[in-house]
Image (tube, rainbow, N blue to C red; front, side, top):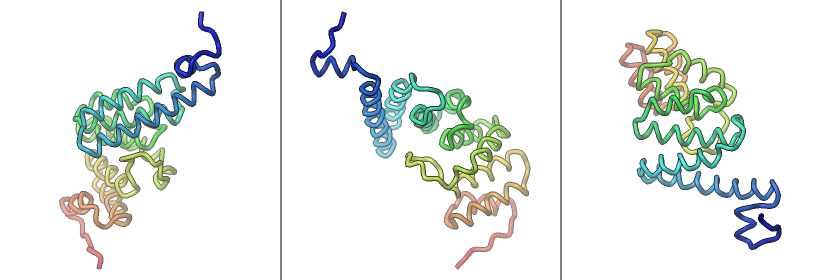
Length: 196
């Protein structure tokens, strides 16, 4: 039986209060998140995936709707996407795709690669429209222009050229240098006006 008031290591391993537990968890999550981002930035995708899996495991005790848990699922899904494990990323993210913009965008990107879940992806991204302009502070979460570009690609998968053109045009309104949307509009035969 463990006694209270033990060594510092005992207090770290066996905190005497829930606030101590949450403090240690928060520190671990923060450090692992930084390591994931650093590995992604350095192009060490296998390390990023390994660290993101540790992060997801660290957060697995949190409630499914907890922001820290959702962020950890996003990072893990993002690293799976970078490593071309598209189906694994979809399986991981599918239960939370409508709760987190980053998760929704990774789900949509994987859906585009696999030509699956296109309608689900559109619905998910559109259901989170209120979050498009919010800066989450997470590495890799797309901005408004990129979200519109993804939607344009998804609508094109459904042969809905009108909606595809609309979203690619919105993407260019937000970022006139977004080459993917410009190129897609040209390929669809849209009349693209290049600004000054």
